[in-house]
Image (tube, rainbow, N blue to C red; front, side, top):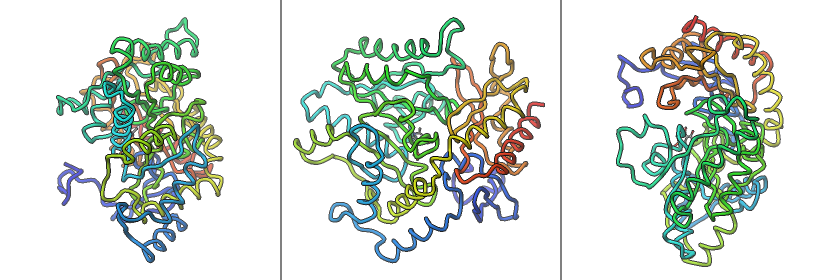
Length: 440
Ligand code: PLP
């Protein structure tokens, strides 16, 4: 088990000892280009002096004060900054330590909201197949990723799953992208009607699907239609931007590209950029007011919510993303990366699709480009790619997902926003070397 310590030397990965900009360095001195920011975490790269100084400064002043007794300056300032740029009516922030906790908090908040406004029969959740929303039991039940769920049933929550909006696989040839998006969104309305509108609490989705599909944005119009359906039936829209948020797609909040605002939004990963473990749930003023004027208290909490050092790190990260123009630069860097990947791999017989938004890019690998048939899972393509990439000095995120019951493979790229044109060349070449080594 490579995720248990102390390490098992028979299978353990290398020991990382230093981070410098876009690179990680192991105890043997080998350098790796961090092409996926771990798992879409390190948006600022490694060793950012400003964030490190902010953390040290906060530690010198105040490491911890429990939120039952105190608030803190960095938590207040970070909340203000997040809200200032947030879409719609998102106006309150609840800080947690990571993505799964943000999703758990969102689910509990949605449930408490409906209990407090006297609609306790609303408890059902709808999410999408091939999705991942975290590993704690509520988040795991919400996610529609079969292999992650398989061993843990029966799961705690009543969740049903509709199809993701996945143009490469599910758009019919005769449809336009827009028509496909409307058809995909219609599944939500059908499912709400099937379950009974008064029983449904929330719909949960990632604006750009990360780990499970490999950087798949919805087609134009899909989320607008989803928003309309949610509004029509009083279903809360919870968007999970744990991976795709914090500038990764070229917008501070990924849903801005889709022109929608959720009722509840989850962020993590890029918020702490790896400098501290932090996540957050943002909710609408309407939800906040209902609870504030009801019981007056969100019945939830963890010891480390709103941790001063974690929020100081988050504050320094978000300021850097905005003040240094890093989010503003993501779209053009993403286009250059897309061009570079297409020129090296666009004609490869096993590359089915290259897609994504901003610096969130996916490459889908297929056995047969014409039929889009995935590789047989026994070939363990994702595992082989990870090994080949690390040998080539590249950290990327190859994953096996499930497509219509069959396993499929993709590589997810989520490099730091500080990358230069030279870095784009290095990253795309190392990806191409790894793909060629495994697939010819
Ligand atoms: N939601 C999404 C979309 C994710 O990609 C992840 C992690 O990859 C999570 C939630 C869970 O976040 P964490 O691993 O920080 O608990």
